Amino acid sequence: MTRVLIVEDNEDLAFGLRKTLEFEGYQVDVAGDGAAGLERASNGRPDLVVLDLMLPDTDGYSVLRRLRHDGVHVPVLILTARGEEADLVLGFDCGADDYVTKPFSTVELLARVRALLRRAAAGGSGAGSAARERFGAIEVDPAARTVQRAGQHVELSPKEFDLLLALLRRRGATASRAELLTEVWEYENTDILTRTVDIHVAELRRKLEDDAANPEHILTVRKVGYRLRR
Image (cartoon, rainbow, N blue to C red; front, top):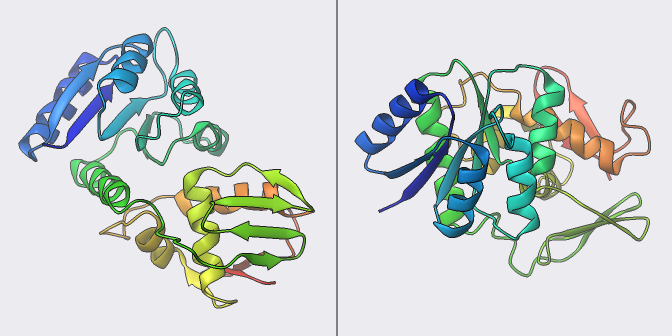
C-alpha cells in the first residue's frame, strides 16, 4: 500500500487530509510538527510527503533542506497559505516537487498526489543514456542529471532539471504550459490554476541565463508557453 506522510499542525486540516487520502486507498501517517515530520520522513520510508510550510517549531523549509541534505528523495508536496511567488520559489529551492495553496480542493490535491507518485514510480525523467546537450555556455548531461554553466556545476532541483529536458527535447519548438504540466508534473487536469511552470522557468533563467530579465535561451512565447533557443 502506498504510504503518505502528512506534516501539518492544524489538527482539523490534518484530519481532513488523512480521511481523504485513506478513502483513496493510501496508508496515511500524520506528524503535527516539523521535528516529528523530519523523523518520520527519514525513518518511516513514506512514498510521498505532504508538508505544510508554516509549522510551529521547525518550519517546512528547514524540514525540506534537512531531508534533501540527508539524501532523502521522497516526493514532497508543499502546502502553503501564502500566494507570494518568493515563498514558492524558496520551497522549490529547498527541494519541493509541487505545491498547493490553501484553500485547495480535494480534486486538486489528489491530482497532484497521483502525479507525483506516478512520476516517482517511473523513476523521474527516464533520461537513460541520452547524449549531452549544449546551448550557449550550458552543458546538460541527461544520464548523470547534471548541468554546467561555463564549466561550473549548476544545482537544479529535480523538477527544474526535468523541465529543462522537456524544453531541450523539443529542439526549439514551443511547449505550452499545459503540455509541460502533463509531461513534467504528470497532471491529469491541466485546467487547474497553477503557476508551477512559470515559477520553475523563472528559476531556470535565474540560474542559467546571463540576464534573467532578458533571456537569450529560455524564451516566452506570449499566450502559449515557452521554448528553448540554442
